[in-house]
Image 1 (cartoon, rainbow over the protein chains, first blue to last red):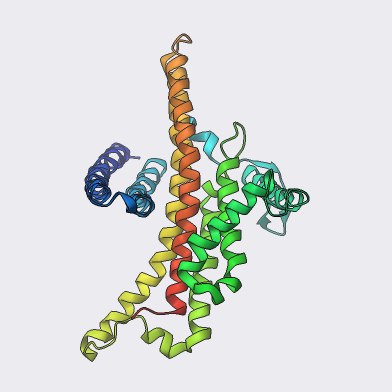
Image 2 (spheres, each protein chain N blue to C red):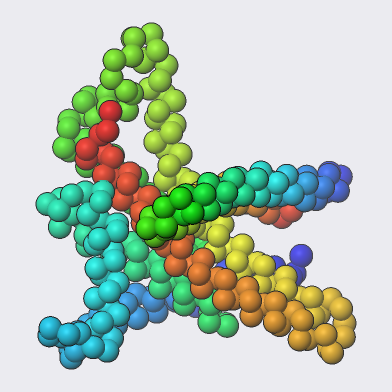
Length: 75
Length: 246
């Protein structure tokens, strides 16, 4: 059980780095979505649906890291 | 970490068939309960309230079915094929939605927060995609549809293994996405409520409890969103196998 400290460190650090990427990605997406809605308000429904789908994509990538972190903690 | 001990499945009724462990855990029980809920909701919701202006539960169910048909089935399959695929897609959507929502009741287990359940659903989608592609186009034409047309042969040959790994990765990501979203939701809730225990004082109960209330409300939204995402991605993959875009 020597590497346990490193495993905990890796889990926490990895999740934090994944959160940076997700934050940037969703921020860029919402920038594009806001601009799209302001240019054509009648397309707001489609932009909203597409925005939710794309956010789920990006959160899934962050959650892959969560799965790896949980594996690191519990093994 | 006995804090997360609530998230591991506990067997309620132990039964072993041969050497296979088939004990009924909380996940299995709540999968059965959600199937019964869907069945009885639809069977008894349509008894009254039909007609030209729907009222009552029938209104809600009709809205759900129209939503599934308009947004999920028809854009990806077209009107003709959509009629054949509508039962499968609506079963996927309603199963995942009700399992996610019933997991928010305190004391229940979310069946979709088990990797086996989501893995099985993704495996079904994988077999549907490959099966319908092979059935409609023949094996070699379907495999050739993975690479875009008009590339030179020495680029197309290494593309097949890469594209095959991509085809395997898509259902895998479906399973992991649903599992991790549901699992993480409940884990966040547990961590919030453990703040009360960790602070060893009972007068701080208002803050973690209000935080956990907010997280539960967020989880309701996430349950519906994840069910929608799983279903729309699987119908996009199946539609892509039926009408390859390149």
